Figure 1 (cartoon, rainbow, N blue to C red):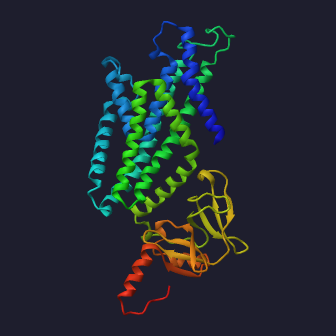
Figure 2: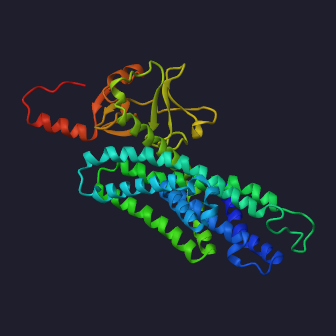
Length: 391
């Protein structure tokens, strides 16, 4: 990840510094606004803005591009600059903004289903927006292609034209920058989903809009300033991409289980079951998604695939006494240390109501109430004359 950050920094520097000088040497009379370096700077700002808010960014850029293009040439614009896309997209953005405006006055229980839906909408918008990032980068490729821009030979150097090589690199770097910023930005939706406070939700949304406005504002004031600011955002997001990806998977699975009432038709597997690490174990980061099972020697192990695609790895879990906790929203696996406990695993909401079955499959001897559910059980027992039932 550090190497990738250095490569992306080099990309930003080339876009903001090298390309304008090459173009100036080849075409001194050309206006700076039309230089390939200026176009690269504007494209980087556009890609960063789209990654922060895919639906708003894609629709907004498409609408601006549509109205800035002569009417006779609008039919040849990319799909995201056509009214059939940006019109309904901006209408949907307005509806989401209306929901967010009224959200602070709506009870959390009524607002959360809309937050779940918005998690899926943001992912879908992110996938759709990827189709806009590619043509933007390809437009840059055309500007640097031979005959459309300058070459190092035109600038008085040896007759080696690196413009095509530069354009070819534009697409993967653009997609890398987009993916990193989108992953980190999407965590805002996940944090809103798991937050019980509407004021926190509003603050998170406000921060995202503020960040998006800084990208648009700096780019409007100066393409170079916009590119530098966007490059800094991308470089900050790159080392956070892994954390953001794990949080995205965590939120996606929780949202899907809740939205589809999966626990009602779910049956735990008799060998391996899905879980998230609740803390760092054996160098494996918190919220890593994988499967818990017993190995051949009877020890409890956790198996996972980095980025969900790479070869499977396995790490042993603590061998001390464990308990399955009945949480209010999802169960947990706890490590017992005397009178205290530590969270070890978070189980998806589909396991709610299946705690005893999970404990029996994985040879965990105790099931207990935890968190708010434990507090509620204690409160009920305080005012009840009925004897308590052992877990």
